Image (cartoon, rainbow, N blue to C red; front, side, top):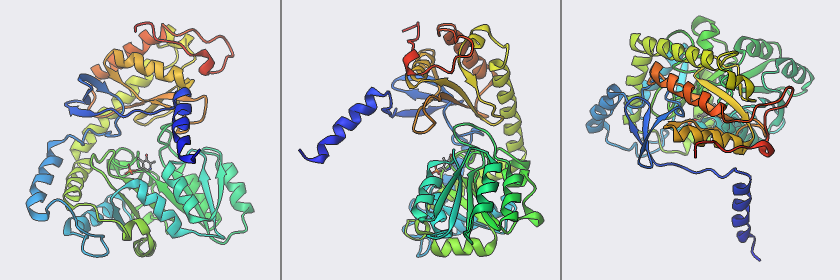
Length: 422
Ligand SMILES: *Cc1c(COP(=O)(O)O)cnc(C)c1O
């Protein structure tokens, strides 16, 4: 039998483990609502934290760019794909994050997967947080440098690894805001360790840029490591498809390092440049983000985060207290509620969906086994009433879940349940 026949069995095994993923065809509606399979759902699954993805200002920028630039860029930025729009965007991004230079990429995944191998190689050492995003992990593997993983947020462990490393070139890679947990890295602590051990630090601020720091300038600005205090040993990467509402990514840092990345990053050289009309939309989004409109959106988002956390906090509701569900300690727009088992998480997701709410269940391998969770993502496009609706639905569903007995761990798949209202 040909090995090609194994794929069907492998898919069956994924299905049996409740690990098969299904896409939905969605149509955006106003106010964080989506048309999905003919029903309207209130969505808590987008990374569009400031509600810019549907903003008319960005759409107008695209319309204005179209007759000037056309649709496609036609070539790599190294050939003829580098438009005036893309060049202006790079200058404005560098300015926004207070770093000397920035390079604009068509996607965040391709950026990290490719800049890590451009920085280190065989014989070098890489230090990676255990919960880093898949694209940093892939970049690390591609580099062929020696990968040393440290426990999530364990700077003490990182310090020992750095101290013990005989490698001359050391690169520390970390998410700034962890995408499935929502917690923020200790930027100052990481930077101090890199200083002490002559290491380079690459921070992925996909979920922080636009939202965190003064004017949404990101975690480096929040840590005071920008402008005249910019560090020669930090590369800052962020994406433009989340809070900025469009797509793409950039990496910013010391001019020499960015020039090196421009010369050697394969996903930059050997890929078609991002279309100028997207660059124009991002420029329009960036102006909003840095201005009073962005400030208003961030304040509103912060209010929603507080409201949700209070509503799911200790003593907020008896059924929640009895359940084994656990709200993770996040202060960002990413608010994960750990359910435990894969099937249990899917069941809660299904029960929410019956109530017109869409909150994704995140399962292994995206998160560690036994920690399947609802990843609630808040956006400035939500209202306080939207968050109330989510809270009420979670209270209702929690009342149908078998109570967790004292000292019992979060339920595993053996303890799965079916929502009452099916
Ligand atoms: C989304 C994400 C990326 C990938 O960015 P894309 O532009 O969507 O390819 C990279 N890193 C982190 C932490 C992310 O959450």
